[in-house]
Image 1 (cartoon, rainbow, N blue to C red):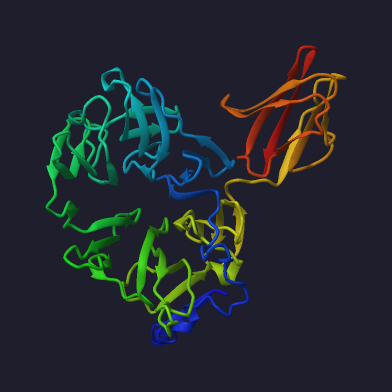
Image 2: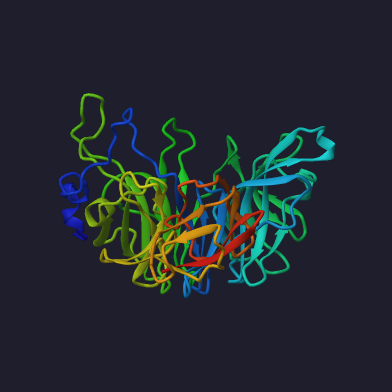
Length: 448
């Protein structure tokens, strides 16, 4: 159900509704709250050369770079770290405007230093990451001390940047409590403050720039209103939306700069129920129109519930991959995982990009009469089972980076230990089952 609406039809707002399209509403039987997937990918951003998609695994506390040609995801490993640093989260990756091999992102970390007397500092540091070499570099302001700022927001990487003088739009508190919002140059440690009101910038915030530099989507907050109303602009003119927007999650331009895609949470239009909630239920949608006109005559609406019977409770963040396809996050109701998908502008699924559980190919295991593994190597399966017949054993599974993914002890004659591959990233995994009498080794590859 791809909806193409001309401007006069904008009053026929039922076109944007999700109820009545044949897909059941999400289950809310658990205390009136809808089920949120335990794992999911979001904040995906395309590199300047179109080869890579950087994204965040929201609940896994990790960030990755996906090679769009091979669909191999590489985890961004922050190294070297500060002494006693533990990283537990990442912000949205932002690609360099002058180098398609370079990105920057916030890293949420806990640092326990000798100076802290055993107290851990929860801080946010700013790092760059080079895709080709996996090199990381901490570029947080020096004035924030050896640990880093308590709260840093990396908002934009301006096009005027160069390898010798970056211009990054950031916000963070100095150690003396003074709050800074403005342009930061890591190479020179210079700062250019922006005018603010209640620590919020008065200047429009850039949400997206077209690749050729001819178009821009900006957001302006009404900081003097209790409702914190947001207004959105395309090239300085307010966007005439088909219906009111509650939240704009993301904006993206097509590589040829001719189209813009807005990921939005629309506001219902009524009637309302006894609690004042709009009864024409709507969920996250993507609105696509020509970047030449902030009041477009035609808008393509991607309604995830009606097209795919899927939802976006961890964020859709529609990002153009090509002039005719988008990368989006979506999941079926009650799913535990919300992966990234590539879809067309006319509402067809091209491929799943992350968390691909489909095919598993395995190499023959080393022989040992004390252990067993099934299914057989000729099978294609989404799980493996291991058992130990004679004595207790230890099971370890690592990924290509040498990171331990699973570590368990198996009791003697335990029925089995099942390894589910459905939630693993694509790539190679190495399993070892070891006891005093020997070991069994298995390598399997999650393929697409």
